[in-house]
Image (cartoon, rainbow, N blue to C red; front, side, top):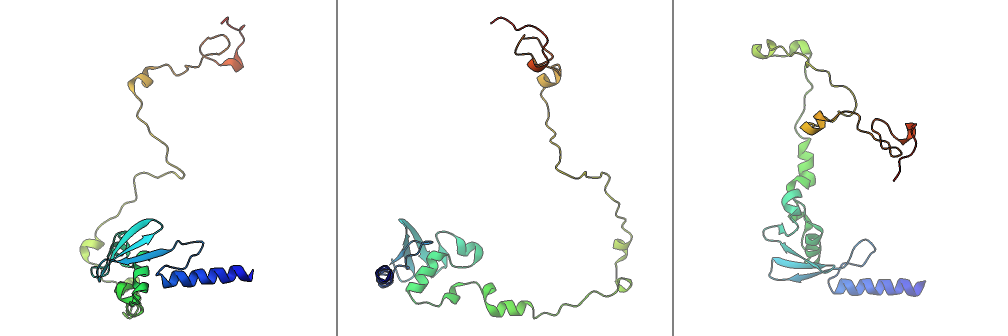
Length: 177
């Protein structure tokens, strides 16, 4: 057991020296290849991802949506020993979250003390004309003309071949094939 643990530790040290993320069961090693000072390519399991630190644009588009660096950008930032907080949006920083609760919120006064404009107070809101039944709504499919013109009972017996019933309720002798 100690030999296996020693080999795993040596492999992790070697990967860290080469710029890889340590190997684990949940992730594959990523290799950072700088193109310019701000443009990097991250090789992750045979796929290449482009990371531009200057414009904060990543090929996967996560920063443009969440304003948080994607895992590939985190790998580049860690390999260059940059401050990770500088590449996150201000919305995720502790000071901004504290400022959110800085504004006092006052409870509403009693309903009798409300100032309601006249045009709003005069407006009458009526209940809905239809009651929506509980449960899943029924499907309302428009039938074609041929479906509407067909007689309702089109079943035929597989024993005698007559229409109007099935083989379960057949009283006739079997037909010859």
